[in-house]
Image (cartoon, rainbow, N blue to C red; front, top):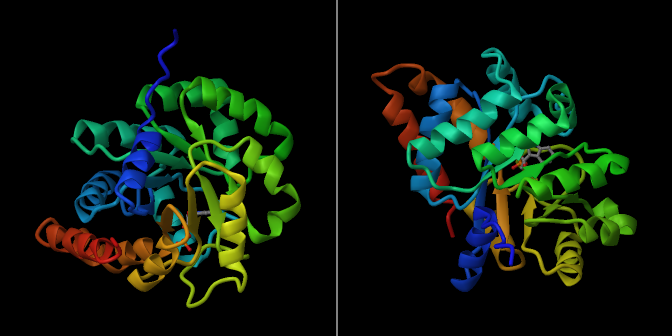
Length: 273
Ligand SMILES: O=P(O)(O)OC[C@@H](O)[C@@H](O)c1c[nH]c2ccccc12
């Protein structure tokens, strides 16, 4: 009998479900402000109570990203961060004892640059649990899904309020969890959300047994609490990336780096509901 490979992402959601908790899922851009500090930030995200981390691969043309994450990508690209170095960051984080499941977040072009077979070999070797490719072409999704499944990597789909006609098709191929985009447009903190976001999330949950997480715009504890009642995970990206940006002066000096890291940790810890 083939023993199903354990996937840390699945195990994490199962544990959270048994304790009735919602996953706190930070997104950060790898290499922002530099590769070494990214490892320190991952350590404080774990200390702050994050359950899963989205590791963003910086990209020169981040079409779905707002200005905060665009600036983070620019800072990271100044260090020539590639998909490989992002995957290596996960390996180094594990070597430091960080045991969070990692979801690699990358646009499709950097994946094509290194080729699908090598990309998935690297993911499997690194023990990366999940993968999100926001601009994955529909006609290539089946091939990518087969490679992801073979590499024990969960290919997580994004569904948006505008996906309505295709949600059933998207969910049929979903793995790991379903990422519901709360609003139209690009990433970035928001004071309010798409009017029918609750119904949208409920409609997705009704069609899948997978955990459902929501992202786009969630930037404070009140918003995390609001979504915790109706879904299994909350993704917070821009608000955390902005906090990193605000602490750059502290992070940039050995004598004040720990102070900067503590500010990031405290910001994320107060999001933990
Ligand atoms: O930044 P926000 O508004 O908190 O949204 C999460 C988002 O950063 C992260 O999941 C993400 C980063 N880049 C993306 C591109 C498309 C969809 C999602 C993303």
